[in-house]
Image 1 (cartoon, rainbow, N blue to C red):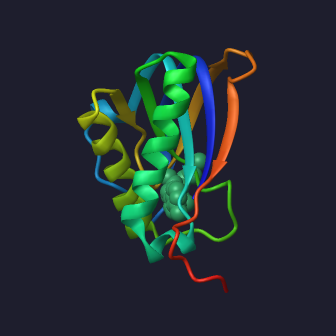
Image 2: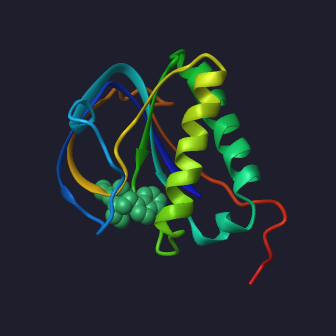
Length: 147
Ligand SMILES: NCC(=O)N[C@H]1[C@@H](O)[C@H](n2cnc3c(N)ncnc32)O[C@@H]1CO
């Protein structure tokens, strides 16, 4: 899994078009949304993550919690982003993993939104520019076989 984490004054998106034949079903409200004072987590779920989704979810949540506490925000935007890797997981596995990251963070008391999966979206972001405002993480499941 590859994550780009941006601490931002806000993130807002608007769904534009389908990017998959069968994108995630969404309500009218989910077609656009916004969160202020947010840690945006742009996530590419990778093929290797399919070997141990549970462990990847746990590691991703831990990394996001760690950074959220450093930048002092409880607002998290989980954003599916297929542009950080050339070895993407299947959409079904990717969506399942992203939903579990969202759920785990909510269980831990974070205010979490997740952008819709399988769409092209316009988005606006206002990076805060401090030294921890732009970070990236690579997560590999421990038992992953080295090919
Ligand atoms: N910027 C627009 C966009 O990325 N759209 C992506 C994601 O919303 C989602 N998607 C598909 N596979 C994946 C994956 N492995 N990891 C994350 N998202 C995925 O499906 C769209 C087309 O690839």
